[in-house]
Image 1 (tube, rainbow, N blue to C red):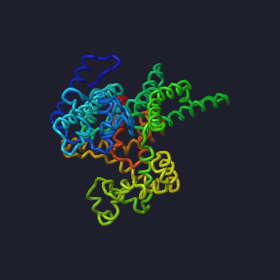
Image 2 (cartoon, helix red, strand yellow; image 1 turned 90 degrees about the vertical axis):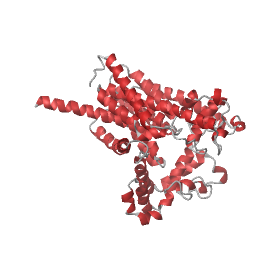
Image 3 (cartoon, helix red, strand yellow; image 1 turned 180 degrees about the horizontal axis):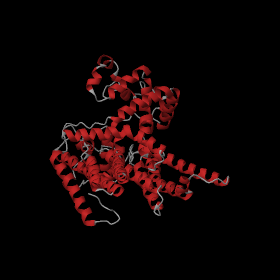
Image 4 (cartoon, helix red, strand yellow; image 1 turned 120 degrees about the horizontal axis):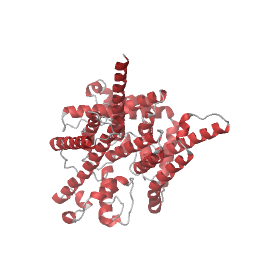
Length: 492
């Protein structure tokens, strides 16, 4: 089941692609059903859903529920791209013309409002299909092997996490797709090719869209920009000293850095300017201070109790039973559902570790909250690193055991998702040591793991965005192993 992409057997490609779509559709019809859950009014999913609804119906990017507040409060605390994608396919006319957000969030939701929500979930399914198809073709291009492209595409499409996530209006599937595309084109840019500018442009476009989906990647943009400048500076200094620069430095010119910088800014600055006009904050997201304050809240934990947080976040009940007595008195700190947990206290003006140290007039200012959080983290670096290990462990164990899909699918999903967070850092270090350019392919994934471990409470769903890149890399390695073994056999 091989194909030579250069020869491009269009008929064979078409047959395999249609077969892939049919298998995905059969699996979906056989095992997946949308649940009847509506967005949680004060949750992240509601912020995205409400914004999409208001963009489509009123032409206003606002997460407000009550109609009379929408035009007065054009506030949007989340990045806009996912909501915008949703709004393109939402239908608020025809039989849904009387649907309102107030109806959707009422205690006794009407049948037509529930039907509207259920219909809207199909947009998530469309994004998931596109995500799986992109991975299918990407693996095919990299490996020139239909079997591996089928395997990788189906692993992602049948993922119990991604399928269950179709029920919720969250950004993970779209973010995974954009991260994959950004990673691919960044890797291709660093290969010797005459299409470098094209690859750089696409990589920059997808990074811009990724930032408008998850604001944390703004820091990845800053990192890449300064990294590119550093490479150019190294090359300049070597040339000034009449020393031959490192070979890799010739792959990146100053004009490439400028192209990258300008394209990303073209995508993100209009939104930052919009937020500045409406809220006085030149930001992608208005939640940056809250996120790091939630993380800083865990500094209240006694350092000797952090190990119980690690145990609490493990999904192995038998192992946790060995620490049952200790956990009973400690887990309230780490259980976000507990009213006295660190997570719940982080928003309390008096109980919060961060907010309690600010003046009243500063408690609602994200910049002040952010700066105070960073200041507190700097005061306890050892504890912060230990907590980062705890959150790294938390980020590994994504909820994949949903008990609604075949057990084999849930086991495969657990293995793939969990191993991605564990092995990508190891693979990255190995590729750096052997000077293999595939390390560039997983550079965005490394940033993801590092940033969420060190600066957030690393909810497991955050780690799902790296899994497609991980599957692509595994399929590439499998292909190269077969090539190596065949060469060995020939030599023998």
